[in-house]
Image (cartoon, rainbow, N blue to C red; front, side, top):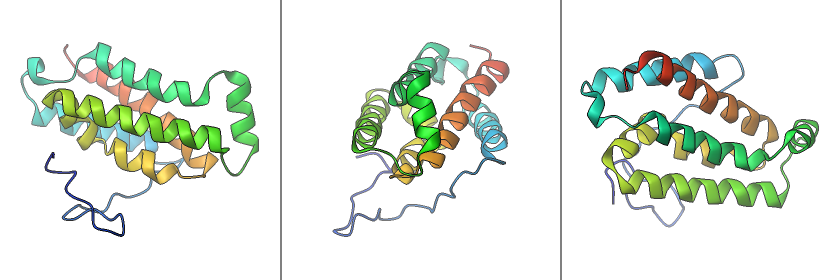
Length: 149
């Protein structure tokens, strides 16, 4: 298992894992920028960073949760998410875990951005899903802007 995703206790809580703050509508963009700048500073050699293509593929996974514009409109109107959407979020979390396990450069980015934690925090909360989508879009935008690969 990877360092940041240690064995879980019976209660489902991670062992030796720092607490991740929830995103909100007013800070998700600035937090994304901080994450990207920190990631680029930590991983100096662009060959060891996640590729722009991979990061866009990650965003596509998130966009698949919402589907089309009609799906987004229905999510915005509802305070809680349907079981179908919740299932898609769980599946997306598994896919991000798989991508993190495939290559260290993917893992470093996914862990730095706390993506698995934020996906877990969505639960039934439709507003948090929209905030998370904005956060992911911001990660991609800032990565493209600041990265040299």
